Every structure is written in C-alpha cells, then in structure tokens.
Amino acid sequence: MTTVAAYAAPAAKAPLERTTIERREVREHDVLIDIKFAGICHSDIHQVQEGWGEAIFPMVPGHEIAGTVSEVGPGVTKYAVGDRVGVGCMVDSCGECDNCEAGQEQYCAAGNIGTYNAVGKDGELTYGGYSEKIVVDENFVLGIPEGIALDEAAPLLCAGITTYSPLRHWNAGPGKKVAVVGMGGLGHMGVKLAHAMGAEVTVLSQSLRKQEDGLKLGADHYYATSDPATFEQLAGTFDLIVSTVSAPLDFGAYLGLLKTDGALVNVGAPEEPVSLNLFTLLGGRKTLAGSMIGGIRETQEMLDFCAEHGLGAEIEVIAASEVNKAYERVLASDVRYRFVIDTATI
Image (cartoon, rainbow, N blue to C red; front, side):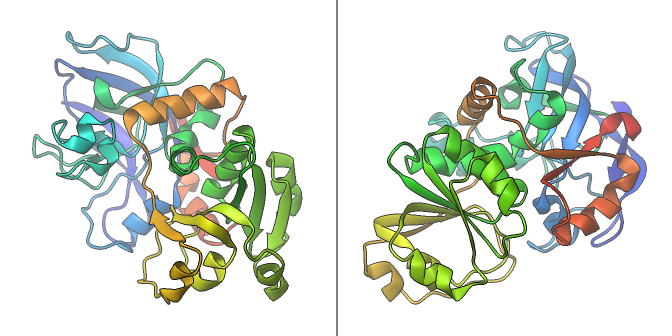
C-alpha cells in the first residue's frame, strides 16, 4: 500500500479537509497515475451532501482526473510510464454482461464501480481524484491526446463525455436543431460539442447573463427561460434538447419545444422526483430520456474528437485549500465554467 495526501469529507455535509489515504500496490493490469489536475463536478457536491442517498465516508471526491503514468503492472499493454492519461466516473465493471461486452460499461448490469463512494471487487473503498495518486485497471484508463492541456482535459472525463454521449446517440449534426438547457460545467461543454458536430445550437438559460459566453463558445441562439415568451416563440423548434441542470424542470413546457419525434434528454440529476403529464409526450411522439456518462470506448472517442477540434473545458484552476469555497461558488453558479484543482497543492 502507498500512503498519499488527499482532500476528504469526513462525514456527510462536512467541509473537506486534508488527510491521507492508502492506495493499493500496482497489480498485473494496473496503472499508477500521478494526478496533476482534478475537476470539481456538481455531482461531487451531491454525494458529499448525501443528496442522492446514503454515501460512504470518509469520501475523497473527484472523477475528472488528468495526470501521467508513473508505474504499470507487468501485464499492462495499453500504457507506458510518462503517458498522459485520464480517469472518469468509473474504475471497474463486471466485464461480462451484454452492456459491458457492447462497450457500455456505464450501464453494467451489476452496476459499474464508481471512482469514489463505491466498493471495489476487492472489497476496498474507492477514493477519487482529490488526491496525489490513483491506481486504476488499464481498461478504465483513457489516453489524453497531446492536443489538449491536462488542466482543460480533466473536466472532459465527466462533463465532456456526459454531453457528448447523448449528442452522438441522438445524432446531433448538420441540419439538426439542438438546445442545451443550462450554461454551467456540463452545459458549456454541450454547446462546444454540439457546435463542433455541426448542429444549430441554442442555449436555454434562466437569464441572459452568460449570453456573450454562450455565443462565443458556439451557440447560434440564446434565450432566457425566465421569459414566458421564450416557450411561445420556440414551440416545436428542436430535434433534441439536452438538459444539464440538476433542478426539476417544467417538463411539459420543455417538451413543447420539441418537433414531432424530438427527444428531451436529461443528464442532470435532480435530487427530487419530478412529475409529468403524459399528454405532453403523446402529442408529437416525443421522447423523454436520460443518459449517463459514456463507455470507455466512447470516452476515448470524445477525447480524440476534442483534440481534433481544439476543444477543452473553460476552467478556473484553484489550490486544494480552496475546495470548500469552490463548492459554495458552484452552488451559487459562480464559476465559468469548471473548477479544477491543481493537485500539486494538496
């Protein structure tokens, strides 16, 4: 075992504090990664606060990890010491179910093993990226292309793939009208990716506060959802709406913005149940769907796509000691658009 420094929440809703954790020795197919940067995702806050249910403490959050390989197990074939690599939201799966065999490990029938707040196959707790090092099976490590800076790459491992996967699955591209709900950590990547795919992109945000940013990042149009006229003006407009917000929406109102056969896909996960009048689905053969990250193969495809198109996340790099303040600012929507921890400061 190797002892490394980390930032952890000792209990639910408690502030994060500096501590040490144990990382396992490198096994046959393991990769030891020196973490350089770790993104702060809103889901880190949900889990620290037990907003999604009971969690395991102490908790070291962080599933947007970018770094370099410092050691590989004797059976590793995909990576070598010095390689630029990333780790996203999962570090293992059963590997045998239909979903795993199809490269959809995120939907593993047995449940994928989260990068943190989970128990590995060895019975040990998983600890995430707010730490100096991590040991991960090579099959759950991603290669970060040279075209992306490591700090801007870290958020791609969650925010990037979480928006890329539904855009690809629902065929965002030339001739398609795509709306992104919310202009935060996920939403800003959704805008960049949908634009790079060739779609006509509209941002639907509570206010016009970030309109200039949205247009700069690739949006063609920007509307305030606080204005009732928006829903009248845009009725029946979109082929695809990707909602990135973690607050319950008026789904009937948003479904009204879809064309016939359009889809409203949720990637944000509100803590509260939502209600829906099914007539809003029936009229227009509309789809209300969800999507969760992406498989390893698709995540690598997303990283390569981002490198090819010169895309990285819009980030604010912080010291690890600022993490609690950063959580407050995320909840206040005061970040443009992703906090990234410089792990050299842990």
